[in-house]
Length: 167
Picture 1: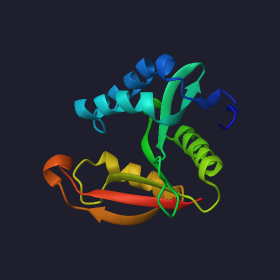
Picture 2: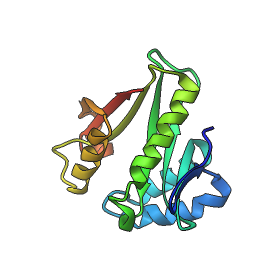
Picture 3: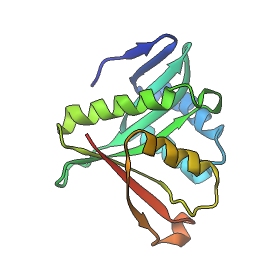
């Protein structure tokens, strides 16, 4: 795994599930426009199983990113960002970018150059306005729109936009 990266008061380090889970769930619960109760349950589960990184600001956990790499990686080699969230008061301070950079370095280390990193979020026509900033964030970090999935709207409620980035 990549070493810890520290910039001023910001520290990006690998997740330690037992130590970090409670604090990171608290951060996610503070973002109710993005995460409902079902999402929180999934976050708790994924924090135990996926690889990822924690952002600490002045020794407080303020965000995380988790990455899933399938056991049998299809061609092209692909990994998925399963969660990326940052405490509301830390938005716009480079925390998300630093977490994403750590995730990208991790995927490059595991899968090599030419790997794809994908993520999905709600599509442009989705009602929750907060997702416009999510899409803008990923696009600003070099992710390209890949496709919109309108299947299973009873499960997902809104169309999902899949995005990818070549590393």
